[in-house]
Length: 266
Image (cartoon, rainbow, N blue to C red; front, side, top):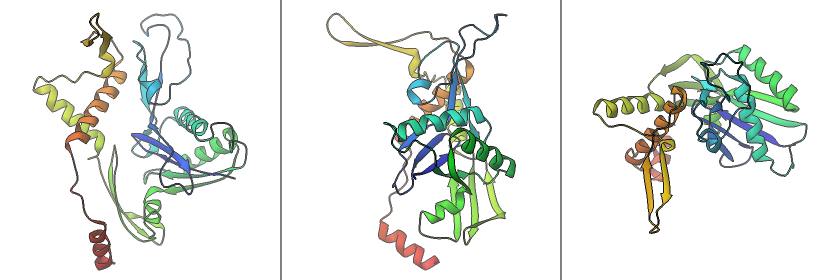
């Protein structure tokens, strides 16, 4: 049976198979929804299926909303989590191979997750995904295992939190955890606010249209595209994240230097 590895982050939802060097599926950790009638209309809203995946989330609709699935390392939207995992498995087992019952699941969770979260997770996987076995682990020990270590200090800089954890022989020492809200999302929000204070407006991609003129040239126009606040904010932060990735770089360090540093602190 296959072992499915799931890392539900606050910004990205990653899924793959045990033994792979990298996740096979990386999608936004959010779901989109839309209704055929505006919220101001008294007619009952029609329920629609959740939108999952970058392409589906980017599909413009005036009434589309985007909702986070994971906040501060904890799943806060279980319906959305189920949709993300179903989408990921459909991508992993395209063609049906390995998608049957009996799959094993290794789930990573944040340091703030509680026993009640693991109970809901287990019920969902056993009842909805026909899991044969489920193992839920804090992310810090798993990060060390990936470096062939079982003890050490782990610094995890995520979207919502930056967490420093101390792990001893595979066990997270809960009293030795330091968490800060200085994460990628706060950095993006701060940059967006600074830009707007300077009069620089960040326009999401859905506010632009492109067409080919009669002389064969590509023309891009900015258009008015009314949208829900959650939809506009999500894609504005996505644009700012792209800007940060373009200008922020970490100085490269040779692998030999990393190895010698590790042996000295051993």
